[in-house]
Image (cartoon, rainbow, N blue to C red; front, side):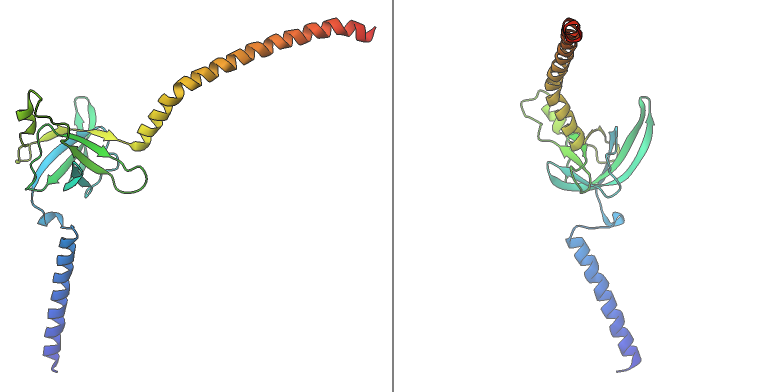
Length: 198
């Protein structure tokens, strides 16, 4: 085998290997940003909750895109987090969608969750709510953040508020009782001391 033939075979094998790698990455859902198509939606949040470029975007639990930009934006009400999201072109996001940045309870990556499950045909403005967002990149949605640990702490705080007040009452009553027993002990000592010494 000549050296030229060997070099051609090595080159073809390298190209087939790279093609196989691209194929496998595509099958498993990874596409570089320049290969993805779709439209941009902007989301404003109070906090990024750990969102970063590449974080997944879900709508009703289905993956519909990824975060492309995360940054701070100065508004009249103060700084807000601005998140740019690329949505798959086959997914129409309704105008009435609710958006929430969700940090995982333990481990994992935060996601940006779009929720359209609350939209009900019986709502008077239903046709406006289900109309798709514009595809030209001008759509802006105001979202909220969700932190399960913060929610859990708030639930504990709420659940323990009444027992805590009851415990404070018990502690106050115990303090009053102990003060009264101190007076009783002092009076008893005053009565018994002359008899014990005399």
